[in-house]
Length: 275
Ligand SMILES: [Zn+2]
Figure 1 (cartoon, protein in one colour):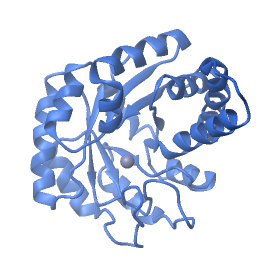
Figure 2 (tube, protein in one colour):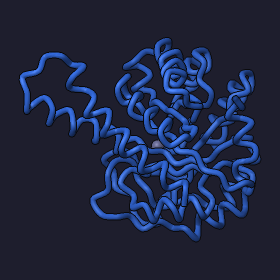
Figure 3 (cartoon, protein in one colour):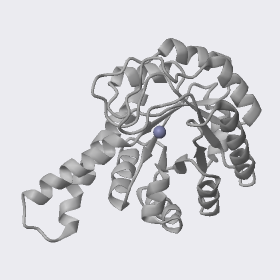
Figure 4 (cartoon, protein in one colour):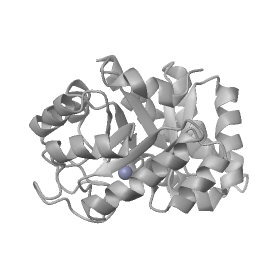
């Protein structure tokens, strides 16, 4: 199996796209892997620093990799939104295949410096680094139109100064669900694609985006699409229904429906790559 570092080298030029899906426990992980297996697709499995803490850094690597083997699926394990180098080091020590350092809340120079340090750390393990330039609204925040969007010239400088493999860009998406369908700036995406033709471009905040927007993003140069909130929501909605409607105490009988629900959404996303 090729390393993600190697895959990233040609993805942009080949216009390839991978889905990066967050898991939170064994059951959400099973839902994602089941979908990847049924659609015969490789996926990036990712966890946030809070999930790293929740499941334990030593558990996550072996858990994700042995589960992927069980389902016979190619996966890479990615650390999503690390804010501290310490978290990056923990992930690297525990077998992660890829990391993100998120300095998007810092000013550009500080973001560049932090990212450079993460790139230096990751290079020891030949692990690719994703950074964020521009600002994708965090959970609970609203993305204001045009505000914090990625500047193409700045993106070019950022990539050449830091040496990142992948760049999360802000073109109108936000983390969490949307109250109103956001208007994405595909023109800006295409400009960024043109100016940094070899860098993997990442779309965060893809939960709840209409399929057509995801397809246009794929066709305009996005190489990695992150989905998290939709899986969390699907899992919990199903679980709540299952628990409220029965007296079952065997947890193994309550979880499968929630796993199926996560799987269904993941399958639907993976189908978008066929178009
Ligand atoms: Zn994100």
